[in-house]
Length: 224
Length: 415
Image (cartoon, rainbow over all chains, first blue to last red; front, side, top):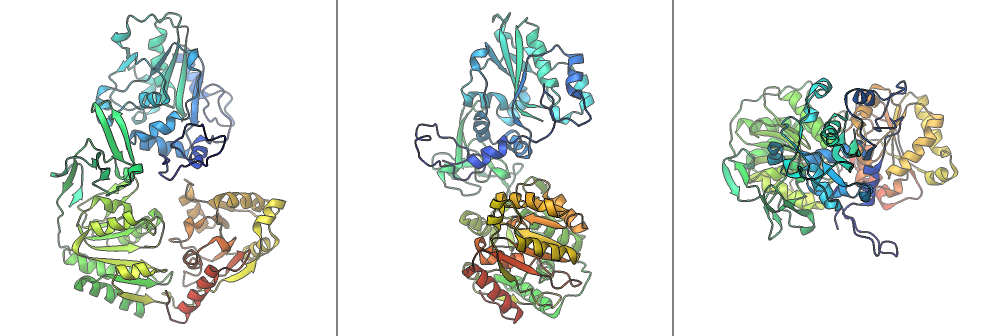
C-alpha cells in the first residue's frame, strides 16, 4: 500500500486493533502533518485566524450584512502549508488520488441532512480540469449527493480581488432537474473545497434558502 | 526530443500504458505507483503515474506530445570576478578536454573547492560548438544557487530554469534544473553536468539515474561533481577522475573534534546537556555563528525548546519548513546566531564566521559528515572554524570521515 500523499510505503503493522481496520492509502506521518491546525485566536463561527486586536471577525461581519444567515460552518482541515500544497496538487496538477486522501478527513452526521449539495464547477472548467473537486471527494467518502446547483462562472475565485468578489453577482442557478424535489423544511449541507471569505458558499446557500429550507449548513475541506 | 504538451511530434498515443503499467515519460513500471479512477469527463477509467506527477499529470487518456531538439551555436562569454587558482585552471582544462573528446569525467573536489567556477569554461566551449548543456542537481536549493551563479556569469545566455513549480523555458540549449526534470528529455543533451550526485534522492533511486542516461544523446558525456564519490560513480565515468584536494583559498580543511555526550539523556531530564551548552557559550562569546545538526526533527524541536531558555536568536529549519529560505537569509545577515537543522543544510550553504556542532553523530554516515564539515571555513577571510562532533560512541563512519578529511589535507584523495 502506498501513501498517496508522499508516495512512500503506508503499511500498517498488524495487531488486534488494525486487523479489522480498513486499510488507508495515507501514512501516519502525512496524516499528522495535514491534520495540524495553526495556533492563534480564531473566529468562533468561520474559524478564521484573527488578529489579536480584532474583537469580531471582519469577514463574518461583512457576510452577515449582505447575506441571509446559514446554519453552522464546519471545516475539516486548516489551510496550513501542507494542505496548501495538497490542494494545489489536487486541483491544478490534477492529482485525483488526493481526493481519496481528503475523503479520509470527512466527518459529519449524514443522517442529519436530507440533501448534500456540492458547489458546482462550470462546464468550461470541468473540461479543463477533468473533474469536480468536491464531488470526487464525496464519492470516495461514500456520501450521496444531489447536484442541485449549476454555474456558468468562468473565473476562479482566487483570481479575483476581495473587492471583485464582494461585488460579483450570484453565479449559481438552481438545477432544473431537481425542480420537482420538495425542499420546504429540509436540512441541507453545502460542501465546498476551500472557505476563504465565505462569499461562494453564501451565494450558493442563497439559492437554496430561496426554497424555504429549514436550514443550510456549510462544510468545507479547508479554511483559508 | 523533449516532451511538451504544445509539441507537434506524436510520441505515444497515451502517456501511460494502463494494461502493462508503464509510464512512457518516466519509465516507471512499479504498479503500486499508478492510480486509476473513473473519469466522468472521458467516460472511462483513467490511469496516471504517481512517480512523475510533479511534472504534470501523465495519464492514459492524453497523448504524449514532444518537440524535436534543436541546437544552435552561440557566442557566449562569461564574466568572473576573480582569477582561478592553478589547480582550478587545470581542472577547468580537463572539463573542456572531456567535452571536446567526448569522455565522461568525475570531478572529485573537496567541499569549498570552487566547483561551480570550474565548469564555466567547459560550458562556454560546449555552447560555442552548439552542444546542448544541462547543469542538474537533485536538490532544489542547489539548483537555485547554481542558476544564480551561472546567470550572473553568463549574462548574455538564455538559461532555462526548471524545478518543482518553477519553469523558465526558452529552447533548452542551456538548462539548469533538478534531476527529476530530465524525465522530460530523450536524447537531447550532449553534456550533462551533475552537481552533488550523491545527494538524496538521486543516490538511491535507479529510476532517476536512468533518467540522466535517457536525457543524453548517444555520444553525450556525463560530468559528475562531488566531494564524496562512490565506486559506482567511478564506474559511470569510466574511471576518468580529476581530484582537487585543496580549497580555492588554499587553507586546510578543519579536522573535527570528537566529544562524548548524550543529548537525549539531557532531554529526558528536561535540561540542556552541559557540554553542548559550554560549546555554544564559547561560540557566542567569540561572536561567531553556529549550525547545529540533528539526526531527527523531533529531537531538534525538543532541544530548541531547551535552548531558547538560555540563548537568544535560536531557530530551527527542516525540509518541510516553508520559511526555511528566509531563516537561512536571516542567519547570513546575523539575525539568527544559532540555527538548528537536520541534514537539509548539509550542502549548498555558505555562511561567514561559522562553527558547526553535530549532535548524536553516531547516526550520521561518513559522506554526510564530510559535507557537514565542509560548511566551515569556506570564505578566505575566515578559512577555519571549529567542528564539534558530539557522539554517544565512536563509529566507523566518524573515523572514516576524519580519515578522509586528513587525507585531503595531505593532498591525497581517497575513496
